[in-house]
Length: 84
Image 1 (cartoon, rainbow, N blue to C red):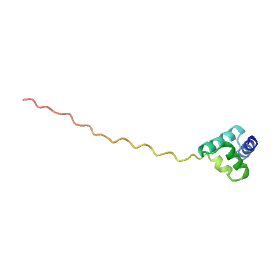
Image 2: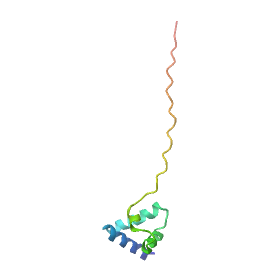
Image 3: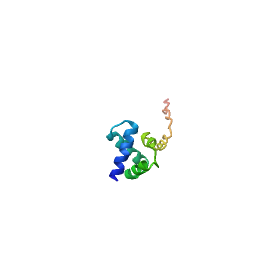
Image 4: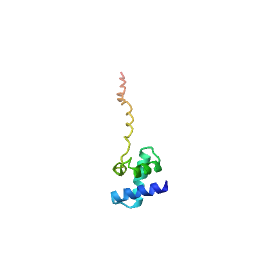
């Protein structure tokens, strides 16, 4: 697998006009964001089953929904005590 990773980095670097470090960062980010192994992604990229564009786009999975805000509590007005 180092060979396939190097080949994939070269493909990304050539297509995106970036250096090899940036190509590796894109490859690694894609693998992490899609819960796939680095070697698996590299091999599928070299085989043509994963497109370079999909790796290049840096898509992230959708973010989980934001937690619901706690219910708002309206303040209780102060109690007024009337003295005679």
